[in-house]
Amino acid sequence: MSVITRLDATQSDFDERLDALLAWESVSDANVAGVVSDILREVKARGDDALVEYTNRFDRRQVASVDELVIKPEQLHAALHSISGEQRDALQVAAERIRQYHQHQRQESWQYTEADGTVLGQQITAMERVGLYVPGGKASYPSSVLMNAIPAKVAGVEQLTMVVPAPDGELSPMVLAAAAIAGVDRVITIGGAQAVAALAYGTNTITRVDKIVGPGNIYVATAKRAVFGQVAIDMIAGPSEILVVCDGKTDPDWIAMDLFSQAEHDEQAQAILVSPDEEFLNKVEAAIERLLPGLERTAIAATSLKNRGALIKVANIEQALEVSNRIAPEHLELSVEDPQALLPAVRHAGAIFMGRYTPEALGDYCAGPNHVLPTSGTARFSSPLGVYDFQKRSSIIQCSAQGASTLGKVASVLARSESLEAHARSAEYRIID
Ligand code: NAD
Image (cartoon, rainbow, N blue to C red):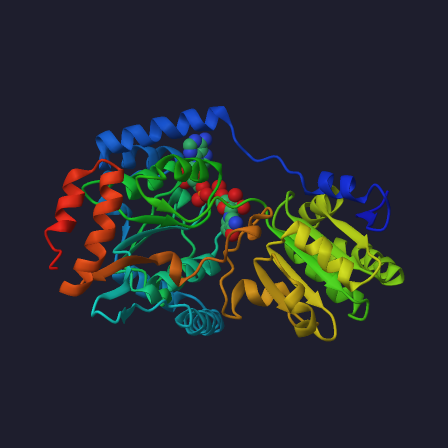
């Protein structure tokens, strides 16, 4: 039984087989929706009391008030000093690189003046308050803290509130240390739908936010969907994906490990290699078989590769890019000699990893660009999380007397055609000739 599906883009059934491979069950569950809507309603109505009850129940805590769930600044500081020097340095280097990269994304306000003195423009402002959800149930993700918090801070968000569940009162010091390094303003150890509700509606202790970002399990995702409109949200991420385009000249072990780096995330993750070199595909398949048992998460990676992975043979590199554009992968590795030459042909991808020395793993942690990326083909219309996701635009219009006169004539005609008399007169009052 083969470890991974083999496909050939030159065969007539390829489109059909690729579609079947890309299909995945979006997790939605009527039971969960009911539980989440109860939690949202209760937290909205009863605030802190409901928050304490749900936290005690779902995270097996025994607290009497939300104050006990708030992490004090000295605890953040202590976490920073409880981790090893090596870990602290790694977090600091990653944070600094992420900050540097995201500084380039800041949008600036602009204005221009027309011949009659009218000024038009766009003013950029930061959101005031943002909530960051950090998953804490089954594993801890310090890199998620950096990737979500730093762009918000670079944008100029004043109050960044992080929520992270602490099941049985346990919390990862790395997550707290990352929060300290990223400049998070407040950390509260709550999670699930109740944390999303508290951020969206506010309670006596928790100030409501303007936007909620960060990944989480089905309870978190369902709650984020439900509060959208009341607050902004980032996205609802699907399973993670990597697509590697390789000319056949990279070490097959490197490529196998790059595929594993995605497959080990979860059983629904998708890892695909596309190459025109059949012999190379055979070598990568052999490397997968040889290296897979040596991973920590062999069973998860094996299931992911078996159900959703593929090695795809194409006629040439051009066809490899056609396949890639069709998939619009979250992560695209161009493991070829001259990736810059291929770049103009890449139409849709969340992040593009260029050349043989750029594995996705470096981008996940510390290269600088964001690791929160569009999944499930949504790179066709959306972009990585960035500073711009925490900035807003306001239009600026400042008419001169002459400008108001010229525009007033146009506006009054259009207003009357819409039967809006007050609009028309408001414009006409300012006509001077
Ligand atoms: P989590 O913090 O998302 O969820 C834990 C919370 O779920 C608990 O605090 C509890 O409130 C709630 N919950 C659990 N069981 C419940 C129940 N029966 N009823 C009501 N509420 C309940 O942590 P997790 O569960 O470990 O999930 C983490 C998720 O985040 C995973 O799905 C992982 O794949 C995802 N993740 C995604 C990315 C990404 O970039 N896409 C990154 C990191 C993590």
